[in-house]
Image: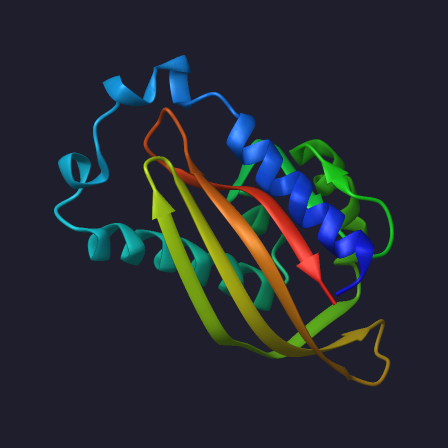
Length: 165
C-alpha cells in the first residue's frame, strides 16, 4: 500500500477518534444502537440502502442526487489530485465532471460494514466502465472506505471517504 494511502487512512481514523459526539453529548448519555434500533441488522440495512441509493445516483450521473447523500462538512480523500473538503467544493467538481459522462456496468463486488453508535464504516470494492464526451468506454476497478455519520436530523450522511486505487 502506498504511503499516501496509509497516511490518508491514518488521518481518517485519527479524525474519527477525535471528533466530538453528535450534539456534543458524552457517549455515556447517548442511547445505544440497540435502544435506537431493534437490531444491528436493521441499522446495517439502513446504511446498505443509503449506499445503494448513492450508487444508483452515480449510475444515473445525477449530481444533485449524489450530493443529497453527503454531509455539509464531508471530506473526500483522493489518491491523485486535490481532496474535496466540504460539500460546496465537491459540488463544483461533480457538476463539471458529470458533463458528457456516461457510466455503465457499475457494480458493487464486495461490501463490509462496521457500526458504532452514530458512525458506520463501509468498505467497498466496485467495478464500472465510463466514457467521457462520446469516447471509448474505460473499465476500472476501485475501492473506497466510507464513513457514514448519523446527523441530528436522524439521517445518515456520507461524511468521509477515502478512495483507493
